[in-house]
Amino acid sequence: MSPDSPAFTIAAFHDDRTGTVSYVLADPATRQAAIIDPVLDFDLKSGRTSTIQADRLLAHLAEARLTVQWILETHAHADHLSAARYLQSHVGGRIAIGEHIREVQAVFRDLYNLERDFLPDGRPFDHLFRDGETFLIGGIQAQAVLVPGHTPACVAYHVRDGRAEGAPDAVFVGDTMFMPDVGTARADFPGGDAATLYRSIRRLLALPPATRLFVCHDYPPEGRAPAWETTVADQRAHNIHVHDGVSESAFVALRTGRDARLEVPALILPSLQINIRAGQLPPAEDNGVSYLKIPLNTLSRQ
Ligand SMILES: [Fe+2]
Image (cartoon, rainbow, N blue to C red):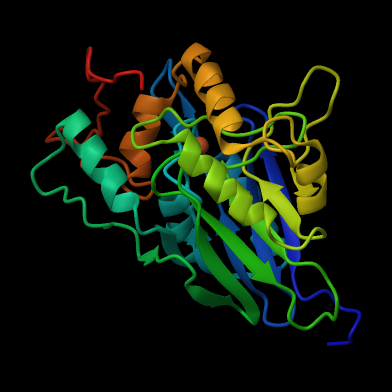
């Protein structure tokens, strides 16, 4: 590889319907790749899943002749179903998330009163990351950074361009910060906490200013096209919720005030049921059909 070759490539796939951005991070030298936050399409009205978004990823993987080593979730999403299991069945790879997924599994096992053999032990994820754990994607050095606050199990993935001198690192920040003009993720889901989110964000913003940040969602204001890449410097200067100078107490007041006015996401109850199972549908009943549960009068606003 010449010194000018990029050590990694990043392809982004924006889902208009949920505002989610999925990524394929690849090492051109080894053609090994990681998929980050893949979306399984879901129509709530008909109860039907489909794979339009996931198939875009499969087409890209085939076209670029990539082998999937990892399928990485930044957290158990509440706004979309994960396509991790569908993609794994097609292209392999280990499905991974932060180790605190166990806490999220325990909360939602109780909420849904799941089957007895559903254990909050991290299964069926193939790997649970500890804070600071390093791993490889082909020859790319990657590190899991636990960034709780939006949920207890949130993890950011920090990748280093070890072979390109001076090239900035990239971090997939999940739902911590959004683009600077949108701000930050909500912190009112079960186990969420605004002060914890603030500390996680400041930890990411302590990285070098040129560090590239890739967000998990964009909800652009009127007139702006969807975007997903920003930098530490940009966030520190312009993020409407956490720019430099915003104290933890000011952030907590702003975040909790906003969260109190936000509606529960439309797909939270379907999503968590699938996403705590790493994108697997619940076990089929004796007629061969999988069902989702809607617990009545149980999900409390925080
Ligand atoms: Fe989220």
